[in-house]
Amino acid sequence: MGVCTDIRAVADIPGEGEVVLLESTAWDPHWRQPLVLEEPAPLPAGTVLRTSWRIANTEENPRNPFVPVQRLSMARRTGAVALLLHVAAEDAAADTRLHAWHKTLMRARR
Image (cartoon, rainbow, N blue to C red; front, side, top):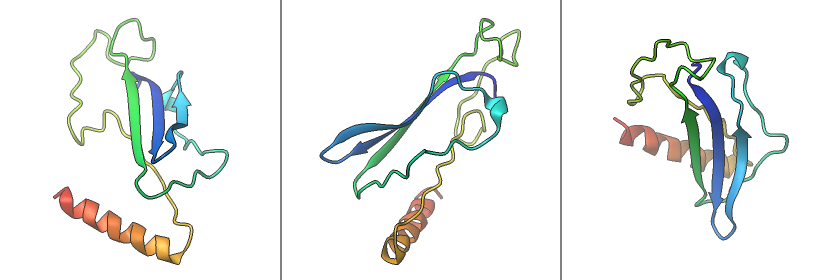
């Protein structure tokens, strides 16, 4: 969607503070390709991931498809803004924990 102009993802690592994983201040949703980190980012247990998007729903935004400006609904599951994060476990034991965590997360969203 042309209303998203900036994307940022940070990891708040216990004992280390925030580390920027991804930052794009000129995001163009027409790229339609995954952004991949140059190096893997191993994240210890307890790390909190945070993402933010800048939404420019204005006539000054040249990529805004809504001219004249229309109301945006940013409610859950609208598809207006989405980010997929792909993760991989470093070994079989971590993979088992990752699957268990994911099941717990999915059950909590029902």
